[in-house]
Image 1 (tube, rainbow, N blue to C red):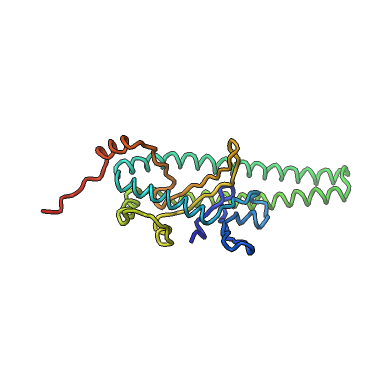
Image 2 (image 1 turned 45 degrees about the vertical axis):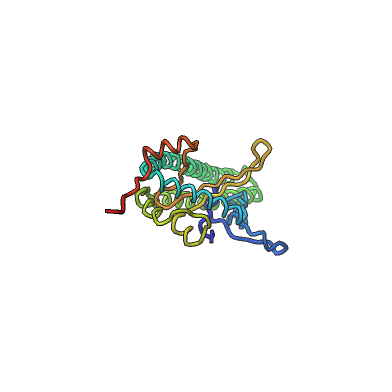
Length: 243
């Protein structure tokens, strides 16, 4: 059910579903570009199906519970997060695109100088061919990266924040204990999976869940007393049905 939802944090490609023949229970996803070995990604971003199911179920359950109890505060969090996400994503995308475009110009200049050196007789035919093939390959790879980054920028612009619209979906659910394909399609926009890394001797893997209409949200960590205080201020008021 996660096919099409999981994205590589480095290249943005879909993670492909796989399983091992010798261990049918080992179901996992990994980066499509890494498996294709096309140069667009050099890490697998491997994640097991049972692991991603557990992560998404817990995160979604917490989001729905918080949004149900504290609607006004939830809207405030979404709006604050929206501005932060837009700024960070724009900087990240633009920086990556500028780097690739700058290198593309460098390769064009190197290609021109290569022909000049050939005409001046400073390069043998064999050396000229070797370098020209190298630059041609890099130009091809750079053009693919430029196209990919422009597609990423265009895709990000499609996702507009709509906290009220998300709350309308939340009101249809009281408590999510099991993840189903229907619930996944109802709530989730995409799930960005990072590659595993070692932090202080422990293996960690970051997963970012982007919800429809609200994007990526981090809920505040609160104690029981803080939750009770928040409930008094922002909690949903029960409506008297006896009238």
